[in-house]
Length: 87
Image (cartoon, rainbow, N blue to C red):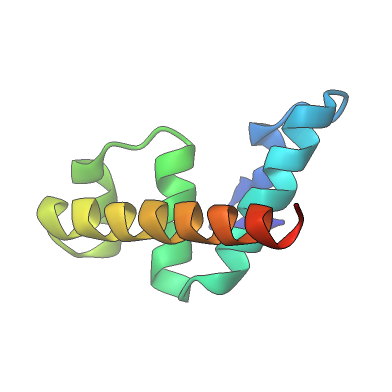
């Protein structure tokens, strides 16, 4: 999966099972996000600062921070729900 020239595979070790599972989880998360939020998540994952992301996307650093917090909370809730369903 590639977003804005960033290849998601570059974030993960294709020979490590845990890394492969994290990649799958990350790709699932990205698919649930709006295009703007997906772009923000990918830029952040590749090491851009919140200020840089804000400048690239055209929003404030504070809004980037809020969006990342919302993404993190959503991912944690889904992870807990998934684990409860599969116990």
